[in-house]
Amino acid sequence: MPLKGERDGHEFIEIAFANGAVATFSEKELVQPHILVEDCLIAFQKLAAYTLEKMQVQVIAVTGSNGKTTTKDMLETVLSTTYKTYKTQGNYNNEIGLPYTVLHMPDDTEKIVLEMGMDRLGDIDFLSNLAKPDIAIITLIGESHLEFFGSREKIAQGKMGITVGLKKDGQLIAPADKIINPFLPENTKIKRFGPDEDIFITELVEHKEQLTFSVNFMDSPLTLPLPGKFNATNAMLAAYVGTLVHIPEEKIVQALAQVSLTANRTEWKKASNGADILSDVYNANPTAMKLILETFQAIPRNEKGKKIVVLADMLELGKASAELHAGMMKALDFDRLDSLYLYGQLMKNLDDNIPENEKHKVHYYEKLEDLQRAVITHVQPRDQILLKGSNSMKLGEIVEGLENGEN
Image (cartoon, rainbow, N blue to C red; front, side, top):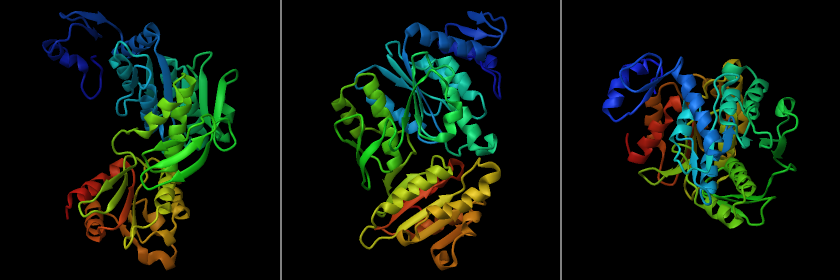
């Protein structure tokens, strides 16, 4: 597909044919077999929409400020127990990635789980119109991309674009967040999730490496091999969709007990010296950071071990960035923490907000190499350490350093 980016894909058509291509879209006449079109990207998208319609695949669409990739992975795990299922690979969730996903699904696919992301208002409207989902899920309205949207209301409006292409008899599953209420479409089947809503969790028990809980629409309890009660919500959504498409309860239970996620999501790892690492370094926003702090702080200390937290900048928060970083103070429980490492220009706002009586536990760094040297030197075999920050802050390098024993 000769799309135009930093380079014009038309430059590589001859190479594609040399490697086995038999035809191509093209915006200009070629010697090779081709379909002449005005715009290759539009043709690519129309072909994907036509493929979904022709194959009559059931489409489950997922968006949200947090949890959409994890929910996508869980949905695929549950659905594949009974149906030929395909899902968005990696983060191919935009106007190029989504049609790419559709056109790469196997011919026998019965269910496809499509993740939908957005950079600007209208992105998800477009993707929803292309995919025409049968089931649409919004996991959470948070602060991701606040810099570009300006307010949670605008983020809610953008996420609710998932309903634009929802089929007439389609099912919307959305959080019990009043911020989306002005954007709820009329004459749409809606299930809300949250305490005392249509769908909710009961009897949640958090363990270091797993969760056990029940949901109001199933008789059997669920076990999830992941930390973080936010993951119970994601699993609940996957389980509910499983019941909608008539998957037996026992298969849903078994699938979620064995689920594995896209790399770099919340994950327990081991340092080379035996310390426990809770790595959550793929992305960060205030909601996600508060949730993982809550989970980590609730876990009891190892005997003779310390609890250490490393927080790095959360990006794309716009004008509210300084306030949101400073506000993370409310999520910190220093009675349950021994050391707090802060890294990045924005985290200086949190450092400045630390009470004087807790300052001795806090270490602030402007350079990644200084932070890495301090953390790796400090962590001992019985310790537990949480690392959380935006992907571009490169905390993953510290995780790797801890795992490999690098100084």
